[in-house]
Image (cartoon, rainbow, N blue to C red; front, side, top):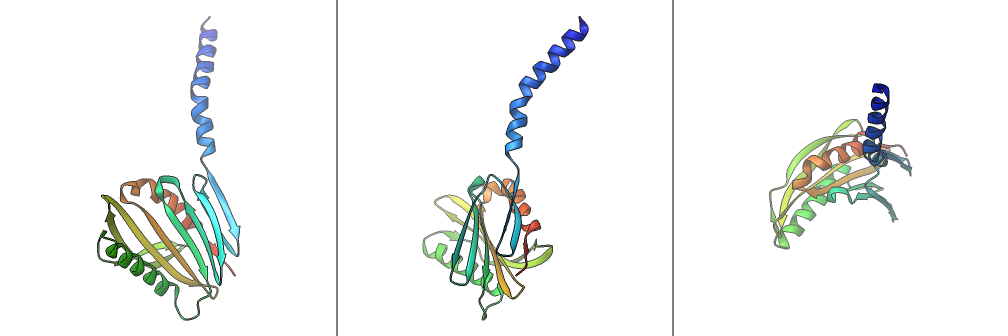
Amino acid sequence: MRSKIIMLFAILCLLLFMPALSANAEEGVKQYSKHGLSFNYDNRLKIKETNEKDTITITLEGHEDLLLMIQIMDIPFLSGEDYAESLVKGMHDGMASSGAQATNVQKTSREIAKKKRKGYIFDYTLSGLAFRYAAYGYNSSGKKIAVPIQYPVKNEEKVQPLIETVLKSLKYED
């Protein structure tokens, strides 16, 4: 009798926890690999690729309102870091002129592709919602790599693991 109760309990536990297990199986990591660029990303993010004159842009977005882009550019007159600075300053000026309250642009750094990369960051508030915008840039294999990132500040804890999955696995080889 006792063994039947234990077996019944085990079956009941499986039935109760099976939906949770299958939900976790849907969350996972995918890999992107094209144009000499490869990285891992959370499968809850939507991915889109555009290829315009000398610039390939991979956009990851959707989950927790994260927007993360990776741009590979053939721009001879700018360094990757200079391009990142121009992205942030342009976004900052655009937000300020649209009535957003924006903090000053600051230098920052972050590990990307296993190296510390320089970037720029600022926060802005528009219609009561606070956002963080950052861009990092570097040179690799003769190309310029830029990584702009934007997300709601309230989602910081939730988006950082998504960002880290991409940035720690990012590789570019022309």
